[in-house]
Length: 386
Image 1: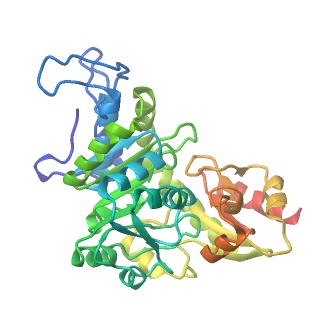
Image 2 (image 1 turned 90 degrees about the vertical axis):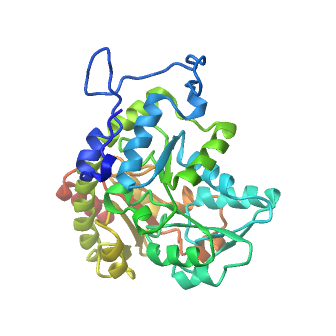
């Protein structure tokens, strides 16, 4: 397996995406990792058992190496879904009686997992009122073990001060974990800002083609060791075929996401000027409430835009009128997609609960693809006219 960070040597994200973790094939000597599908391999040598549920197939390790180097972390793992990565990571670091602080503006699946499972497990939790460091600080308890947040958040694209939260956590001897899916490793590296564990739904930008589910976590080795121990029990492993597809997809991560970010910045500025659009949230716009923080801790602003239609416009009809942009529940693919969070990621919450999170029925989450900027702009304009 190739590695590009030995002896302190590092390379650009573009080079890491293409080469890091590649499994050298002694048969073909090819530049592409071979697919290893075996469910069991020889066990006669010490520590030699290779098994998919042990998270040590060559294709699994290839993805983990690429993620580790992109994030600048000590270790990494790949999972069968983003939620497998999130749930396994949290359960591995928390026990009965521990307290964890969650950002209020959180992916619906993560929030639902907490509300569904944590009371039964005896794990205490609190949700912040906002996204400032002080909002987390005021919830610290003697038994607070972990602080978990998203930046940018799903779907409101709110940011958290990663360095500030890291400093707060270290003061109180807490672990920090971030869902960094919306930024991807190309546009921010939370580990380098002091965050202990960095998670991604690899279904999104890392995969980039809307054709499989996967998840990853990277961070400190001692913490990843605990994640791995629990992962073997919980069984959220990714098979060799899909691991191969993920590794292949990540080779084009940098050019894909950079083009998506260029398109998103262009469209976000245009949306602000359109009749029928009540507000636009994009970290790269000066109108974003945390624009200065975005410039400070991000290398780019990503391909996600959230905007809210005026009350007199029907968000479902608007989406039906789109001809290029597809209504779809996922995001991060090369094709542009859009969805109503109140019908998808946050459908399990009441209208009152969503309102408390700042999610109205007119809010739309727009994942910008790699199509022509002008074609996407014309599609939005014609859908609004209809």
